[in-house]
Image (cartoon, rainbow, N blue to C red):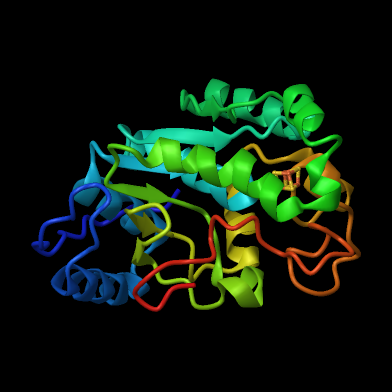
Amino acid sequence: MSAAHKLTPAPSPPLPTQGDDPSPELLAHLAAESQRLESATPDEIVAWAHETFAPGLAMGTAFGPEGCLILSLLPRLAPTTYVFNLDTGYQFQQTLDLRDRIAEKYGVEVELLQPELTVPEYEAKHGGPLYQSNPDQCCHDRKIKVLERAAVGRTAWMSGIRRDQSPVRAKQPLVAWDRKFGLVKVSPLANATKQSVWTRLLNEGVPYNPLHDEGYPSVGCWPCTQKADGEGDERAGRWAGKQKTECGLHTVADGGGI
Ligand code: SF4
């Protein structure tokens, strides 16, 4: 297990009041901190995020390999982090079971946050499954709006995205203002590689989704996830046959983000 040196956060300009824009000074500060953290380990970045933003630090996870790795670090490095999952109603049972395996192993309870309408209510309202006819709207209603609710009263959120997962994620800073949700976004694994994450998961016995062993490079909602042959980027198999590659959670960030 990696040891984490403590990186003292630089003094920060104030965060904006909820709903206000960040100051240019804050954006410059976050960009400088992001740059400073480029040579830090994921453990150090998680510890830095806790030192900087707790108790307002949250984390969103879909229980991908990266999320599971960060979850394994929380008890030691960021124990007060509030962790949530956007429980669309369309997740695989294996994903929901993984929540319980993580809780059992690390004592980290991930809260399942549901959309306003259940799946039957939602599909009845739209005359059928919207993931077929309008997946952008479905993601907006069942993920984005739920995260907007989770963001209220928080100062920052962590996610497990990596730059080499797809071209859309290639410029993700380690730390940036997230305009969409009005929070700082910390991505401790942004500059990590797929191999480094998996090596650590396996070496440290971190639970992961068994669907990865069955040929799913990336696991999301079951209607929008397929097996892939390992060619192309890691998001292959998500929204197969459609132009869509992202649900919209990770597509807008300031400070050079995306
Ligand atoms: Fe709906 Fe598919 Fe988006 Fe899940 S990934 S919220 S099922 S469109």
